[in-house]
Image 1 (tube, rainbow, N blue to C red):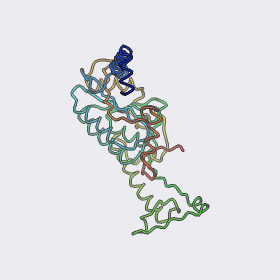
Image 2 (image 1 turned 180 degrees about the horizontal axis):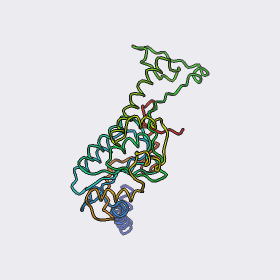
Image 3 (image 1 turned 45 degrees about the vertical axis):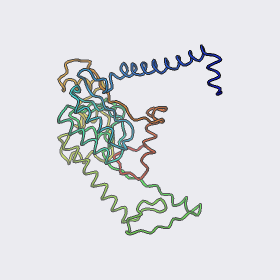
Image 4 (image 1 turned 90 degrees about the vertical axis):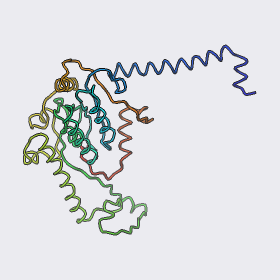
Length: 305
């Protein structure tokens, strides 16, 4: 006879109590979780019951675009979402992902108004994403700009020499092992990479000029990697107005035809489970993003390290 069965026979009341306690814990825990979700975040999209403003958060280093695009499409196709606020707190990230988010924001904005709300930092790829929106709102002290491209390679040549490590490479073309950590870039490689970065930088400049109705020559003068405060960005025409998240929500409500000064907020359902994100929150998510995309990555990103 098993120990569990012996315990149930010897202590039937206690065993029954423990079983009921476990069921109650799961039941009431689930109810509490959903109440917290509803009261703290307004509502996730599975609970949408009245018209409101869709809220999409773009935080940390931008390494992929899939989830942001999926959320934009969900809100575009939901009749209860009358306008969208994209809350950006990001130093930027991968070029391709930033461009994809920008393009989708621009596309959805033609169907429903989108307001970009800048938090502490909305630089480089974070700013690129924002310019797809109909309006951009930043705090006076928001750090934005950093309109440039960067590509990093690790050079471990001296370390390898000290430990006696040497790699043997067989390649089909002279540029195939470009960026190898065991050697420096050749002059030809530097020229080729600079041409690549200049081309991608030009794409950024043209997108800004088109979206913000600015002359390309004027954008070129300030698109040298420098950062701006939100207040400076407004003066330069890079941002529409100063305000916080609440101001952005109220602006979106006005653009979406919602008269309520305190509109209903609708958040996308979070269906991706990740232990690191659950345990350590935003800092853990930022760390995971860095681990997911090793160098080298062509990036619209403000780097401070």
